[in-house]
Image 1 (cartoon, rainbow, N blue to C red):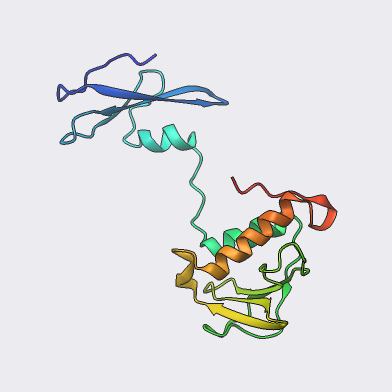
Image 2: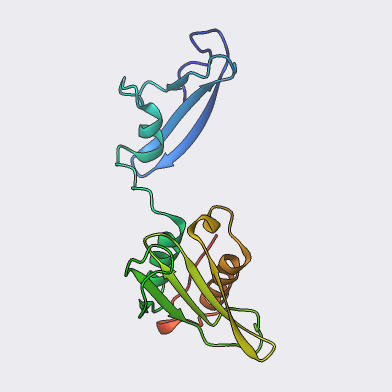
Length: 177
């Protein structure tokens, strides 16, 4: 249990609890907006200035930032989707780290993409769809991942649905929660 309920400025401390394998951690935040001081209970704090990192990460180093397209690629690859090297360099940055994915067309999901090619360097994504009995391709830039556009959302949704229904090699599942 936290040892004190009042901040050094006189404001009340609101405590948050986090359960870890190493035990229970407590973090107190001053309720006064002009203060914002962070505190820990006596047994959780070690006197360091980095109590928030200790509370959230258990002294582990933070994972390096990876752009959203790299996270999508890694997660989907890990879950059984088979990306292959694309035959052409990126349309935007001209680098060779472009990966391609083929998805089978499904009559119950006609709006899903059938192919995707994604540059792991800059995030450019080319997604092909079948529409009006002919294929069409939409290309979006890496900036489109900041507020995902319909082609990105369609690819994510198709991967989520296929994984949920075990429509991936070896029956892998993908939990997007």
